[in-house]
Length: 349
Image 1: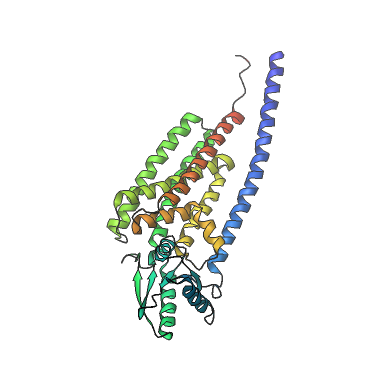
Image 2: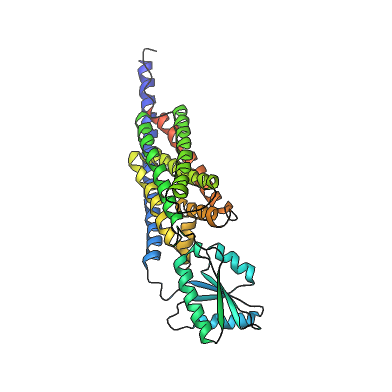
């Protein structure tokens, strides 16, 4: 009888823990879904809105900041406000902003010369670079001056609009998601312990490395859309696929197999839109997308292809934090699944 009482008490404790876990999952699900709704709204409203009144950002550089300020004011006063002009401290700062995608073009004004220079960065946004260049050249002509255009990071022939990076990240994200969704659903049905979680995670890592290598080979050798070192591009793709897989594992561990839709929305949805984003987007949209795995993945791939990995640390670090967070949630969810789902002890023992 005492054994039966202990067994009943243990069952009640497990039921209580299971109830608390269920409430926590519901609250977490509500928060996650609302967060994804907010991110989708910010990104897609920013992408589809009318930006005619807030055109591409351009920088003005001159040895005399007063002259640069006057030119910026003139550009901002153009009919229809097609540009947003700001003064840059010097040419190096303007080129850095162009490389980071914070501006579409820069006008370098040289008062003692009959012509000026227009710097663009097509790799970070070909559409805005072209639009900004056309407006700046028309304004220069109206002032009786000429302007020579120099693209500091021209797009490659197979990537004329600078969007292949976004498509590659989208495909790598889907690859990691699909393998993790299949393995995660299998694990969830068996209430996997740490040993099985580790083996499955190892399999996902191996798959991610293979996916990155295969994706890099496809765009470099099959479609020939990009020209870049194979190994860095393969590692960038593997990191994107790995983050996608781990976040999918984590979502399934917390919400069950149906939770896989959450990382699918965040990973796939924000890769394609970011590939088309440019300096004319609202600042909040750009800030949000840069911090998401899809946006950070596009930044990383673009840096490998166009900027010789000079700016790779920030997007790689962003993906690294997502990876660590996903691993933590994945193992915590696995530990709780074992604790809540443990079978009752055998009374005969």
